[in-house]
Image (tube, rainbow, N blue to C red; front, side, top):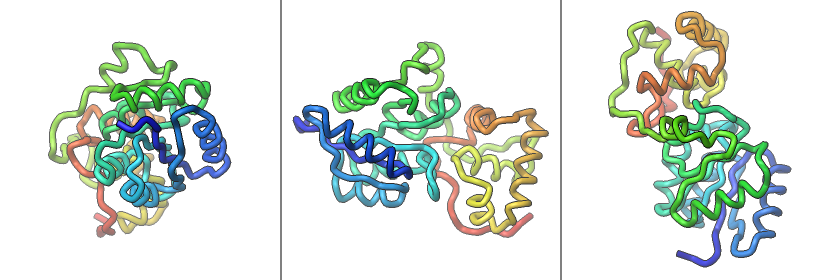
Length: 231
């Protein structure tokens, strides 16, 4: 294990990256080896730079941070992913854990929490933001969803279940429309029907439902990008 912790920063906001970089570089035994504004660039840099820690945002243009976690670990075996996000919610925590992250820090937390998280991950430990660190909830969030097959959800049509999967992985309506070959209006209609059928009003609730049904699963790759015909 290197004495210096080598960190790759991934966030689409340049000002935030600059602040994080300054904070990390000011710490003894830490260095920022690279920065990326999207998941694709992050995966490429991870493969080239082999960082110890990747500090990753969940919500970014293009590929979502959740989808990128497994790819980052594959690109740089031995690196550990620390999610840094605005989402102070157990649904997102469990989704990140299911995808393979080792730590979860909320952006509203103090700078000291981020630095502590980086050090713990480098020691082979895990870290959950203090605002979410309640034993029973974290244990439930850390339990992988079992199974490797696409689960059927009786109350949803196949296309609605497919749309829910994309929503759970963090895709926007425009991104879902592009991937499924639909209009944004059609996708928004699917999302509205999902909320109505399931009685779930927020995206966090939809993510939680997808986890419970096995739709979001670390053992199955995220949905692909090939356009599909509308059913």
